[in-house]
Image (tube, rainbow, N blue to C red; front, side):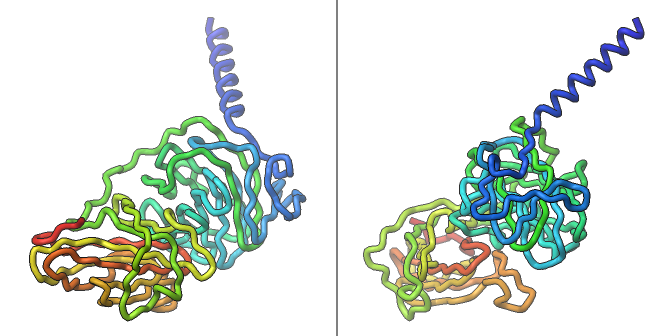
Length: 365
């Protein structure tokens, strides 16, 4: 009886292990599985692993259609200022979720980053800190294992340590739709042993309590389509005329990622945004705001503020991340006021957020 029980136990373990092994699908680096474009498709052995060397390009899977599940891969990178990435829910080269590393920032709070891509724009300046970036040692010319568990609007990202997530993403920014897997790098990086599972993972416990929403937070903006930089940047007054406006919601934090709603063109990396404020009297109201990368603020067509918040704009170490760093006092007249933000982008995040000191005597229309 004991022998039978032992045999049954071993058989159960064998079957379970086999099922677990079958649950993952390997994706070899060949033209049947990957969109390589004009890149070399040769696989080589590097530091003991059959791997693909990617340099200055993005590649994507052909047949993978993954919304929820798990991605695992090995990565080996040199030291340098570049950003090798794993892309998931990949729609095309301009739209995907991504996790990437910054080898030159090893050990720093921004050594790693989760960020979405909307219409070719990465949002790393908009999404930083807990749930988006984390410190880790990035040893060059070493194989590192990465695992990403994805479930609806959340993800656990593991780097090296497969027991404790490096980043617990509690708010994936793109809509949860299925897509492929992509790899990207601006310098020679080796990738190996890509596999994925479509089984729903069990995410680690987390505090899903969203940060406290400040009073007076702006939750909707009127925005235009993309406009000419020459026509709308750095003007002494602004009267947009017959431009079409649409009302768009912010994220729960108050940030609106403008790249989600517009597609830039040559000479057109500017969007007009506005608030319509009804005031009971003539009054000044303080408005605190954050933006990326350039802004000009107008009240009823007249300029009241301009600023730069791009990468390295304030000192050589400045990242240009968005925050509550700037304020302006709005000179409101009695009646309806048009408060307009002209927001220009360079790279790294195209966004805006604002909160009004107090709403007494005013109403957002």
